[in-house]
Length: 285
Ligand SMILES: C[S@@+](CC[C@H](N)C(=O)[O-])C[C@H]1O[C@@H](n2cnc3c(N)ncnc32)[C@H](O)[C@@H]1O
Image (cartoon, rainbow, N blue to C red; front, side, top):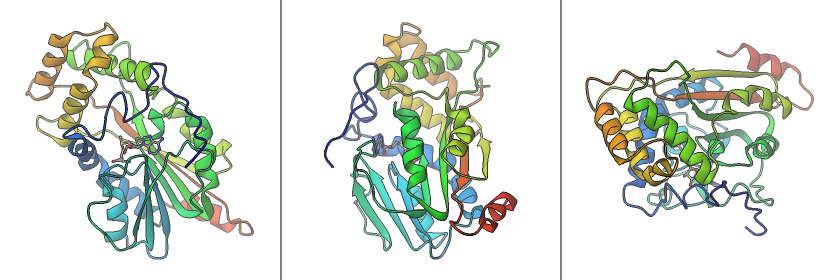
């Protein structure tokens, strides 16, 4: 794609460049730990929204493609277009119905068609131009279709106990924000933003995976901290010893903390002629 207007993070970086580089050993496994923690929740929601035979789906920032493949294998959708700026984790095994597109979704000419389902998980929170992208993704939903966005919500507050976990989590959000522009502070505004993009009705749910020693989400955070260690140290909020202590804490029975949650928000694109579709979305569980 040409003419990409880069709106980089404050530190001049983008996801996959300054941090979370896909070519770095183990990055696919890190993304898969996140997928293991959340895929069942995602699939349950997508199926409850009707994803199934006949649906053409777009998976934006598909990562290692676990949701794309499960849509085909379990929900039996007709096709999935899996898009990512780096497709190395998507091209390994040919899957009937799975098409892979290497593209930057922030490009002005990103226009892969219209889809019954447009899905993006843990992608927009890393992109400074999230507001424009929500409008753009809503435009890619076919009449009668649905946009489903999932991103992280930070559940720490001023009263959260000052454990090693809390200190490092705060440093992580601040460090990723300064480096690549990650910003989860606006994620709770998704319902409002989807409604503003013309989708109706809109609804949301949140899932917080349990932080148990050795669990996929605990391993995901430990690995994420290792990979973003330089960005965290640059905040001045933590030092190497604090990061090491938090990783040990996460892997121990002493751990008593809340993971960041996953907020999933969905909104339907009304049929051009049939108001009844909007009513149907509203009554789905
Ligand atoms: C945290 S991973 C999430 C992967 C997957 N959606 C999941 O939930 O398992 C973020 C993904 O978004 C992709 N990504 C980030 N910025 C992108 C962009 N501008 N265009 C396309 N893909 C992008 C990354 O390459 C990465 O695969």
